[in-house]
Picture 1 (cartoon, helix red, strand yellow):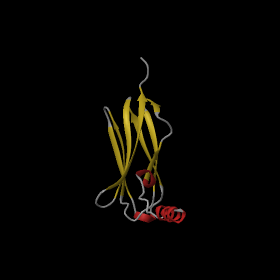
Picture 2: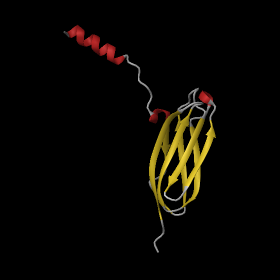
Picture 3: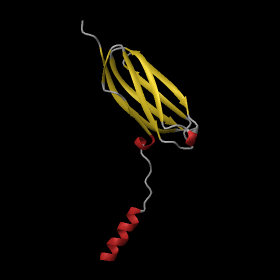
Picture 4: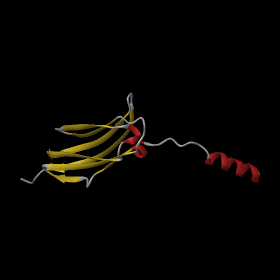
Length: 120
């Protein structure tokens, strides 16, 4: 019985783990709540990989959509990318970073934020 447990543990520890979306792309913001008109500074971390071709960053809100794309050079590309969206009006937004290969979306990271309007 003891030998069986050791063999089982050894086999389980050798399995291959597929990377999750957070291993490939991650969004970092300096908060979740911003004052209108908001300047959103987004830091996106991308794990270098030969399949990486495009990084698409979006701010999708109630009344505004902004996006930008950065062409990536596969495994020789830098890890950290900074994107800035200016003058976002009040509303709820989903900030999204999509990592694309030549044929598919490889990973998506999202974060929700709120831009608060000024009191009247």
